[in-house]
Image (cartoon, rainbow, N blue to C red; front, side, top):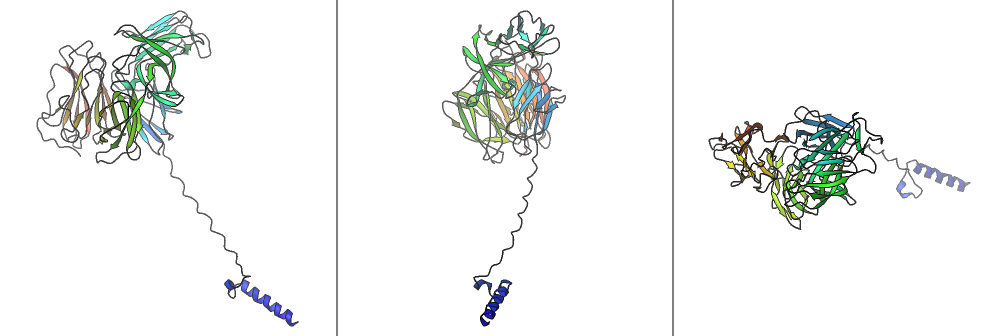
Length: 534
């Protein structure tokens, strides 16, 4: 009985310990269930992703004026350009690249892939020149027919009864042809796409020797193309910055879905200069390009702002001076870039953001990659002037009257971007085409600058008007295009293109002049007291 009482007392003591009494840490039978962990905190919601935006201006590639009512589209999004050609396309889903299409009746369709728009709220500027359709002609599609472009060697030769609707049926009534030669040597931007061809290994850069756009509709407006198993002959007028034309080149057609050129067939050079052409056969109609994929090396460099700080996300372009091609690259977070150029060639490189533009050095490359000696520097003024022209005249020269008296930037005085006049001419191009690029690093307050083009060759077969010469002005992301006006004669070698006026904040306004002169215009600034904005 005593043993049972003792045992009962022991259990009571253990129960007391288990209920919180005594020294639980010294008792091997003690145990307490830990409290449950607190529920995890809800992660903060991700920041809202802002849609991307593209702005720009569509201009007539021949006259430079803005083109209104152009449909600008990507996927299901579209907008129309205003009367001055300007547009803004918003609500674009962020993406590594966006393919834009530009269409309007009477104009050759255009297309361009943007640079990266993957960051939230990112934006870019895409300015596009569009060519008016060169020839529109009605004909009997049941008979063989040659669509000839007046003043050009470009042509499309059709077999009799060779056109069909999309459903395979024969066209209704007379057919209408729309054919336009494309001359990229004078302006690389008139070519659809980004000078990239699709290959098994991805996209490869191409060099163009001329292109042709051709489309057909029947009397009902239904699109027509070649019947299955039927071909047609195309002749492409050569357009190249190269010293010599190859005897044969591949033919590529433009894929409007991918934005890449697709090789199909070849063309041979025929005729006698200056009436040569590339001739080949095609099995369907679209934009056809006589070009070739080229071997590349790379120009490596960096981009900085006026304060010397590296700039990430800047778009760097290389444009051929001895070949007709274009390539682009984006700078990384440290402002570094590597852009492709054709092996053993000359090209110029330029960087820009939506609001700034850099100097444009010309670079000669051989068989190995090269590095720039200094970073491309974005200018606060964000103003540049690009002169291009055709194979003749051989030599056109850019002249810029500066902010002080007697300041003139031209081939014998290329100026400086680091001191007055804060204007730099990249190179004196003396063997056709250009481009010559003039960059403004700083602008002065309340001054008038003048820009003229001089026909140094003094040849008029053709002159600047027939070349055709072209001026492209970038002013803080806005674009102005100038083509020569009427009135050129053998005694008016000087084309006064525009004046540029500045206000007290150095904001620039482009004032068109558009006159041919026998003598240079008088400078407006008559003192040396220009005050520059930093």
